[in-house]
Image (cartoon, rainbow, N blue to C red; front, side, top):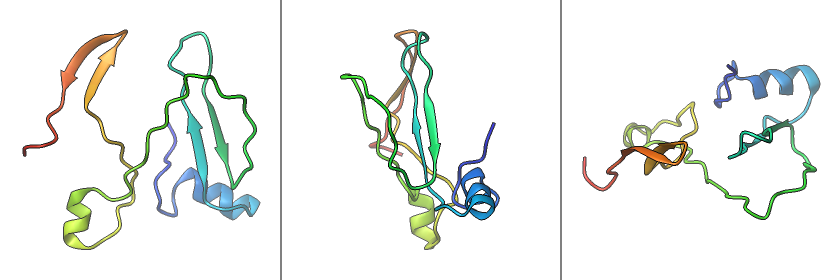
Length: 98
């Protein structure tokens, strides 16, 4: 387990301080059990050969709660509509209604 948030105790912040590169990281997770994902720290350029089926998921930098109180969140978020394990839906999430 590694902390990848935006605070000074995160792994990117530690690498930035110790090795002198920007507090940036990139993660590429594989959807297959036959291949590994990859993680990069620093500002790149990153060198990988992407699959034709590459899917990009944008990060949400602040949750609605943090926007409401006017602070920056320490974490990253992604929009999740459902969760599947081995192609079987576990849960669908309603994001339109509280």
